[in-house]
Image (tube, helix red, strand yellow):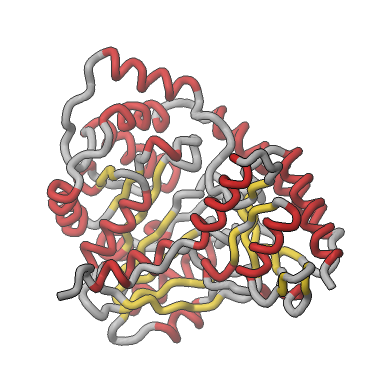
Length: 399
C-alpha cells in the first residue's frame, strides 16, 4: 500500500521557496543579502485598514461567518466589480476565500475532471500547473514569445485547443513577466474561448499595478456569454492593499459554479478569517490614495530598474508594464563559470549568484522559462539598485 496519494506526489518542489529559504538562512547568519525573490509589496498595510480590524476585534466580530464570506463584503465586492470593471454580479455569485490562491484551487477543483486539459501561457505563475495536476487536470503550455512582450496570440490559443480542453488560465498583469494585455488583445482571446466553449480562469490579482496609463480590462467584460457562462474572475487584496498576510481572495463566477464552490468551501475550510474580512471591507470601500502612492513608487522603481539593466552586458529584460516583476534574460551567461561553479541553466545561475554576490533571484525554470530569472522590484530603491549593481558585477566576472 502506498503511503501517499498519487495526487500529492504530482506536486513539484517550489524553486521559489528553496531559494528564499537559502537567502533567509544567509541573512540570519548576518550576511548582506539583496532579495529579488519577494512576491509581495514592501509597504505596510494602510493604517485605516488596520484600524478596521482593531474595531472588529473590539466589537467581538470573532465568530463564524457564512462560508462564502460576510454578506456586506460580498456586496462590496460586487460594487468593486461594477465600479472598476463594468461588471454586474449578484452577491451569491461572489465567494470570499483564504487568498486568491485558494480561489484558484476552488475553481480548478469545481471544474476539472480526470484528464481535462488546461491551457496555461508560459511563462506562468508556478502554482497554476501544480493546482491543475492536483485536481486531475493536464497542463498544456503555450509559449509566449519575447517578441510579443511575453503575450500569447489568439492563433496560438486556438491551435492549443483540443476536444479535451476544459479551461484556459489567463493572468494579466502577469506574474512573472509583468506583461499587460490590451483590451483588443483580451477581446481576441476571449472570442476564441467563446467560440470553443471553454472556461476561463481570469486571474486579475495585479489589476491596479499598471504603469503605462492603460486601464485594466476584464475577460468577463468581452461578452455577456463569457460573463454569464464561461469566465470566473479571481482577485484579492494581497497586492493592491499590501495585505498578503491577511489571506483574503475572492472570485466572481457564473451562478452554478459559484453555488458549487460555496458548497465545497463550506466543507473544506468554512469561512475565511472574520477579522480579515472586516479589514477587506474597509479596504474596498475607502478612497485609494494609499494605492495610488504605492503604484507611483513601484513605477519609479520600475523605470530605475529598466534604465540600469539597459546598461548591462550579457543580460537584458523584456520591459514589464505591470505587476512588480521582470524576467531577466540570462541565457547569454550559460556555458560560463564563476570559480568552480558552472552556469548551465537558470537554477545554476541563481545558485551561483546567491553564493557569489549575495543576491537572490528566482530561477525561470520555475515559470517555464529556463533562459530567464525573475526579479521583483518590490524592495527599496536603494536595495534595488545595489542588487542590480551586484548582478552586473557578477555577470562581468564570469569566464
